[in-house]
Image 1: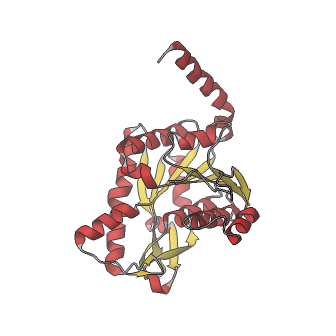
Image 2: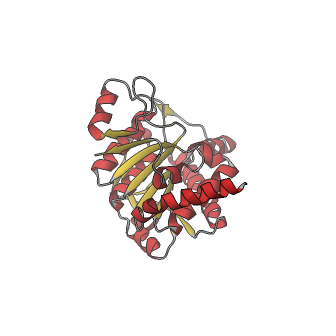
Image 3: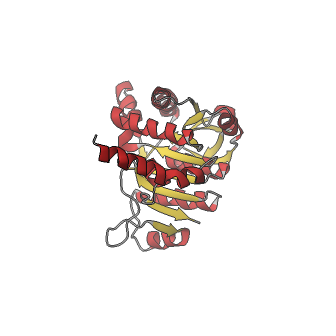
Length: 282
């Protein structure tokens, strides 16, 4: 690095100060998944950003997915999957594998990455302390859950202890069942229960695009609904925007759909004028 590079770094830090002050004590829920989860360097970079967020006073909460890892383990164990309308049926055998992979392998990998960067993270699932109680999302899909009660008391206790929660999207049923919950859905429900300042949905796309293929930086919930109705928002973006709208109307100040593959995407969104992705408000 040259002297000019160091000067640019110092200027960036100085310009970030108002944003750092803005997010002091703010709760920021981050749905982590996609490309970064399978890459060691990207995982380390993400963990470093999360530790920095906490260092400047924010309260980050990580909710993660793990679909590729689940598929890999199901294949190794010879567990065959049935699909209904393109969605995996989660039977009793499958949900055991899902819980093992998400609450074990994936969750602890993220916890370790954060701890390795000097943070203090603790892994848990929606079953811990009745954080996330679910009903069946669709009887045809088996043990796929829809959060109906979220009790975030345990998360506030962790904030007080300067601990970063890392949450696997596994929920508890009313009768002791275990439910697999979509990661975006879980993140939205938890963010709404916390009345979070921000919900960041990290994806493998740049954001919500208009009919011309350009990323729209700010949208209202009504605009999202109109773009969905006319087909501008389609395919895999629909569940994400549905989650965003529901969370925003549930009390989250703003939801941002952004590209988690971009270096330091979280810091770029929170601590710069530039921002990243598409912001959705109620």
